[in-house]
Amino acid sequence: MPKTFRHLYDQIHDFTHLFEAYRRARRGKRRRPDVAAFEFRFEDELLCLSEELRDETYRPGAYRRFYAVENGKRRIISAAPFRDRVVHHALCALIEPIWEARFIYDSYASRPARGTHAALTRAQHFARGHRYALQLDVREFFPSIDHAILRDLLARHIGDQRILNLIDQILIGGANELREAYTPVLFPGDDLFALARPRGLPIGNQTSQFWANVTLHPLDLFIKQTLGCRAYVRYCDDLLLFANDKPTLHRWRAQAIAFAANLRLVFHEGRAQVVPVATGLPFLGWHVFPFRRRLKRRNLLAFARRFRQLCACYAAGRCTRADIDQRLQGWLGHARQGNTLALRRSLFREPLPKRGSR
Image (cartoon, rainbow, N blue to C red; front, side, top):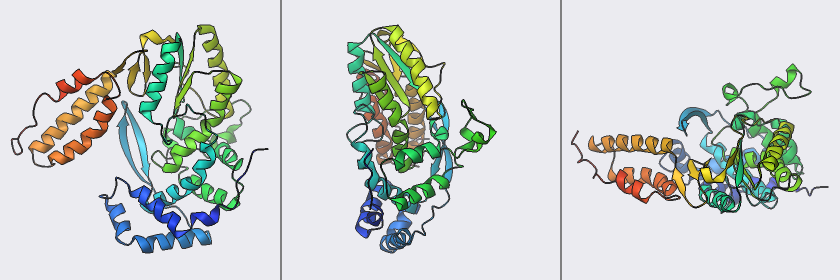
């Protein structure tokens, strides 16, 4: 019988707990108008949130939708109102530790002391010790996450009905955000009513990143414990399994695909290939080799295009050098994770144009 945690809800509407959640939610976003407006009267806003949560009258607001291009794909991003993001952080601060103690070591997305750099390093470590790798990624992952399955997974360790009710409110509030991004799938035993099952987590929510890990945790355990794959790395819905022979990986491929169907998830079977590690593994924007990493050409071209746009913006006087530096830091941090010194030097060989020169 899994351990369940009760008596959590009274902590979530505690003013001090909400204040800490507010501080985390505003980090790096204080210049945004909605954050600044909340901050101007944050005490009143937090007191109001505390009362709504205490009285169980809190209801999430409407999302603001926009599109972003990531790895050549156009994705729908749904931004919750800032007060809702405070609640998301408050909820995650309470329940994330319950799962952190249970998650496998080699799950790297949206977790403390993990991230893309650690995932790349671990993948490279396994590549040095194995001849082959199986690559798996979930098709339309965030739009496909089934609410009933996710809630059952959460309820295994949460025995506080009021926390579960709050989770339901957040799930219902985002249920339609990614509907247009989902391709209907019928699994064995389904009838047509299955197509109406609530599904989808808005990309961008703090809760969504955490719940994505909860959703795939049973798959992690299946791969590690049932299949016996000791060399395994997962970053969100991108998976790498390593072995020294192809038949083992082909067998694991079929078993992982069958298990994912229990979670109502589908892998990109055309991409689910067994490849020699010596040829390089496309992973998190890189080609990972046993002893080096090469940035994907598509990512490099996209950055070069953005950099030219920033230079034009600077020359026209629409942004400052500090603005450019701030926008470059994220990409430079990403690029430093591989063998890119010569590449970075070539990109920044030319000085910035003078302001007002265009």
